[in-house]
Image (cartoon, rainbow, N blue to C red; front, side, top):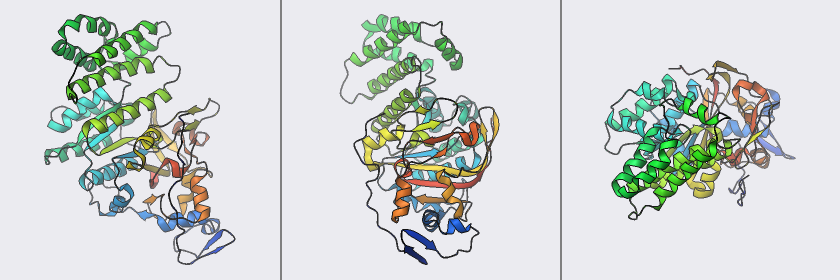
Length: 444
């Protein structure tokens, strides 16, 4: 686990005066409300605080006016990077709410880069489309990770293109993963060396030749490398040598072409190192965090990080529990970002109670939240969807709940037997955008 020196709860909290509430022996008794809730929920100080602080979101229509999200300005504050994390992939409503939130960040708060949980080299192709409109957007989306291959994601990217078509100050797109590093990265490295250090061209070709993908089918390339018969050592040595060569090339301070070329070489190395390990989880998030930080500094933009909630969360001890399989534990991307950027990194999680989603093998039923998941406390809110700023003032029972170890939905295909834990809700996220029910995305 990555060491953490800071406290998981450092915010100053002041207990609010709640109309109609009487505090007695640490228990808050709340007067009856109009919406139908159970008696034990009415007596629950956490459920009462959630209900009092939830701000209903009027619609999930991506094209609707954004005034119902205006309160997010205070929640985002002076953030340089905002993580938008969905609790599961493949739901129409969470994708629509993320699009509306991204629109607000772009249109109202000046964010100008979208860093996506997908490959760096694919991100270059996607950015070209968003800047120029040239290309086949659905065909590009079909090259994304399976989680994103839906008509709803096409609409997200189509909105970005439409924004760029009417604005000079355009939004850029960057992939922060390495897991399908295409041949274009290898070609870009060779082209750069040929231009700036032609005498070293034979040397870089010696290293790139054996490791450059021989097929555009990146799954086939990965299957070859993961084959137990493949001796990974020589390929890994070539990737390291290629990166070291590029890093050693003389360059001017601030040379952006050199910086991009070195980043290409780093993704090649990340790919060979990552898939040489017995487990890729910790390596993947650590490298994605480095890539996100690199893009933030390189672009100079305020950045939206679009990913799963597990990645955007500030969770240095994040853990997935799915019996009977071994637990999966790793420091999340967001934990690195919080260490580097402090409160200039903010997290917004998109959660839900129940419904269905489109998973790896097709539609998956998502049963109602388990009794010990944090979403269970949201049942008292009489709204189809709402936002909740977790940094709002709260009484002691609520603070105890926010800082206790949290549980939430894990791998949806495993149902209620799988959950995510390893940290508190207050540590993981700054804001929740919750939806009661969800339905599946439409696959391409």
